[in-house]
Image (cartoon, rainbow, N blue to C red; front, side, top):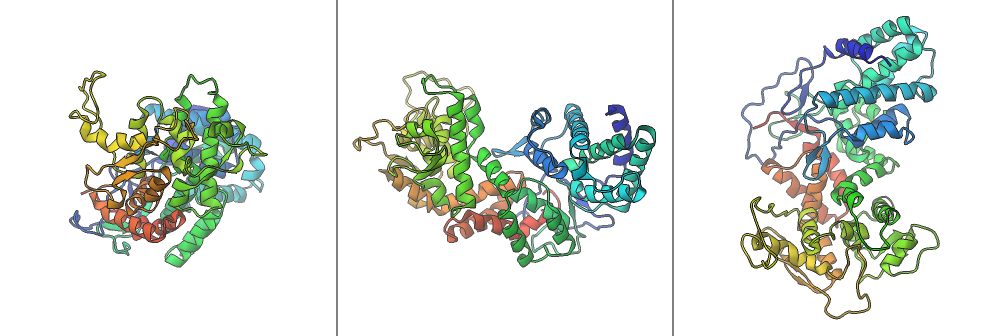
Amino acid sequence: MDSMRLIGALCALLLPLPTLSGCTGMVHEPGAQNDPGEPQANARSAISASPLRRLTSTEYRNTAQDLLGQGDELTAIWSELASIPDGDAHGFASGNIAADLEVIRQYQSVAEKLAEAAVSTQRSFLVSCDLGTPECVEQFITQFGRRAFRRPLSSADVERYVALYRAVSEADGLDLALETVIAGFLFSPNFLYHKEFMTNASQNSNGVDGAIALDPYAFASRLSYLLWSSMPDDELLDAAGAGDLDDDTGVAAQVERMVDDPRFARTINNFHEQWLELSLLESTERTDPEWNDSLKQAMRQETMQFVDYVWRQGDARIETLLGASFSFVNGPLAELYGIDPPSKDFDRVDLNPDERSGLLTHASVLTQFGTVFPEVHRGLFIRDRILCDRPPPPPPDLELDGTVSRLETQPCSGCHVSMDPIGQGFAGYDSMGRKENPDSADDRPAFQVHDNSRSLDPSLVGTFSSLREFARRLATSEHVARCMSTEWFRFAMGRGESERDAWVLDQLGTDLAEADGDLRHLLLRIAMSPWFRARAEATP
């Protein structure tokens, strides 16, 4: 495809875009009046403003695959897409950083290559009529555009894309015209960004102070990226257009349908890959003779298969994620765990409950945090990702020698006393997650939890003599329920929380604890919450 032709064509397409607020990413319907008055920073029902966000690399890939019918065979294109940097929202990828000129060029390149591949290999998936007729061209643009932009196109949108198609087809033929139109959709901010249109300010804000309700299509898009990490399908867009997402009954029906869909596995994978920081495995090295890339991949596969099973076939409870004495392993992992191998790779196997407790003792987790000072990094993982109580980083100018005790010397002890005694509980596992001296019950290290921040659930504070007891306390703690709710809030919203969001997190954590740690219930509560269907009107 001629890049200059695409650039010239897009200049005409992008000129009429709605005005965006660079700080909050709000897009208002034409004619909407927006004067919410002074923001109420201390209102219990207020929420923080969210930034304008691009699709993350994972969201873009999933959306392009669903939109174009393309898959994993486009390795080179997906690699180019993965090189586009994502922002960070407390450990989760977010498109919350500005796109510089180089990023724009990369998006252009990816759009061109995807369009060319789609027309050459997926034409029958994309078009079911004769593009030589005006009726077919308009039909394709209307239908494809609704899916690409996650909302119906305006008549002006349709006219611009039809004009583009006609101009290119007359000069260079139908195939290149189709490529150019598809690339134009993929390169548009309406595709690249989570552009959340909002209703008129005079309409219902769902009871959230200083906020305006999302329009039905924006809510449908927010819901689909939460549950599928991809765009809404036609059924969800139809439900938005019919008003079926305006009440809890309609939303609950869609959530139930979407969680039962295979695409839900994408979100389970996407969330846990980031929450557990599994990308660290890629760069992890060991001198152990059993260490190799195949074992590294098996560790990751075990964890992904385990969380998928718990969520989509099991009870989806925190207690199972953190305390299960079963997993899915192959021969080398079974040897690492000291058990008999399954008859088939990655079949379910039972583990010793005194040695293995859900994700806490997966080789993937113990290995990536077991390289240097494992008691520090394993303890930090629990403190940060399970308790949401991450200590501050060490002072940049701190110099220590090997004789200094981290637990007894200031300023080190203030933070390390909250991490190291937890990590010491995993001292019986080597740097690859292998249990050392598995037959010995003597001198097992204890898990000690200190509450320096004075914010933990009292049931979590103290000394726990066994892995099983420690895991049970974590799994049944309201503090851990609130932390899991916080992690899913960050994932769902693409941003970190602020003081204005405290009431949201308190409410979600309480609901999750009362639901016995049922994480599917948590996602339903998020989807049905008034704040999830609204955006803050302005940054305070």
